[in-house]
Each structure stands twice: as C-alpha cells, then as structure tokens.
Length: 174
Image (cartoon, rainbow, N blue to C red; front, side, top):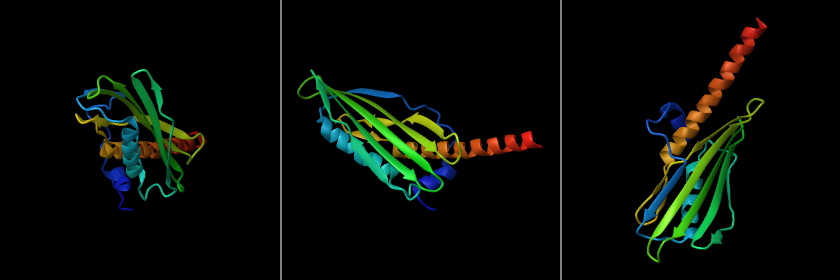
C-alpha cells in the first residue's frame, strides 16, 4: 500500500532524539472555548487515523465537559482498527483550560496513544505520548507525522517480538 502509515512503517526512524512530553502546559495571550478545542483535536485525530492501513474504520466519542470554578476539562477518544492482521490504535486526549482572565488562558493537554496487536496471544500493547503544540492564539495542533511514525515503530516492534518468540520456540523444540 502507498498510504502514509504503510510508508511510515518503512521510513520511520527507530527513535526520536527528543521524547514527547507526557503533559503540555502553556499560558496563552488568547483564550478559546474548550468545546472548540476538543472539536479541533478530535478532527485532527480522526484525520491522522483515517488511513487505508486501518481498514476496519475509525470511531470517536467525547466525555461531557466538566466545569469547576475557573477550570473546565474534557476528554476525546478516537480509535481505529485493522481487520487482518488485527491491530488497534486508541488515542485519548484530555484538555484542561484555566480561565486566567477574559482574554488569556492556560491550557494543559495530556495526550497518548495505545496500539495493540491481537496477532498472537497474549496480546501485545504499547502506549506512548502524543505531541501537541499549543500556539499563542490557543490553537492546538497534533504532531501527526510523529504520531504516525510512533505507530509504525510500535507495529514494527510487534513484528520483531513475534519473530523473537518464534525463534525462541524453535530453539526450545530442537
């Protein structure tokens, strides 16, 4: 296939020089409404997973926004799966917004992806943080290229793991 994830499987570096932070926390001179931010990151995540590699489709759901004092928070879940061989990717993004003034905001984003493979038992799973950039205007942008490369690296590592298990089993039986 010539889709971005299939190319990433072949082209992705084994490791990045700088690790993705688990949490992105940023004050901005501009304040944005949390529902708009959640819709924005949900669309980006769906677009990132809407690939021919995931032939089983992409789904999403959001949890209700919780408000407490000057803070509000919401969570978006996006998942995709491949039918054969069976792989799943599940992205979760938690966004918290603290209202510092009518014109400024403080955003905290915790985003991660879990990729799993049911090719063999027990299932293989790996979770990693997703890079998110928060601009001065409050726009949140997912690092889609890095997300796809991390997924490709994970899927590649699952293949190595099953090959390693197969070679160990052959050694034990000989």
